[in-house]
Image (cartoon, rainbow over all chains, first blue to last red; front, side, top):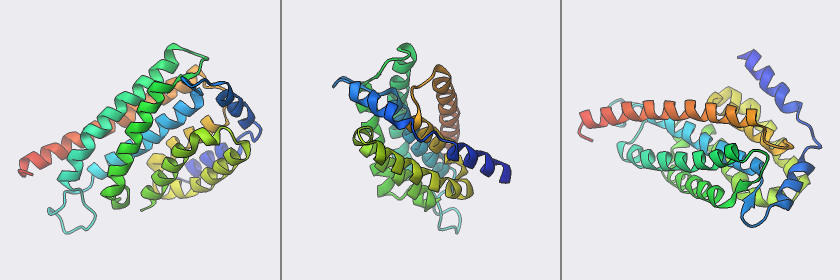
Length: 134
Length: 99
């Protein structure tokens, strides 16, 4: 645990502080149909964070089966399955575009579809306190 | 609760992303905030550590390399597999109980 903490902190603290201007330039040259590849990567990771949180929720004991107040509702679980799977398709499509267009900007339409999936999933998870149940 | 805080912060960053890329100072502020979250994430929600690290890397990267993309896809595959495994068990449990 200590080693992991040191490794991650070292990586975080070693970030180049001047690199952001390049990212800004990437965004500035994007047209209305394009987004920086970095933005797509951030969005994909944001979706992954939600998927990890949803996974941890599904691993909780089912409500009513144990005396634990921290539990998983079957109704909420059923809402998560399709939202995560459709979001996954949007994430994969956006990343696939980057993969087949190396060194180029991301596709705005695929990016927007991923953002929409993230927003819908986030709303449901907030509504049912999915992240707070863990 | 801490998981909710982390995902809420990531959601906020996502919402602000188009504006972030137009403001270098704001990006630096966001990166600093994420760096402050790292100890909390490591302690409370270790599963999210690589995700947050990837976001910090992306915000500071000059470009997305093929290796970064391959690593992200590999990590995504693992996350997908874990979700499907948890979903399979949860659905089986719910079907057994008639829920």
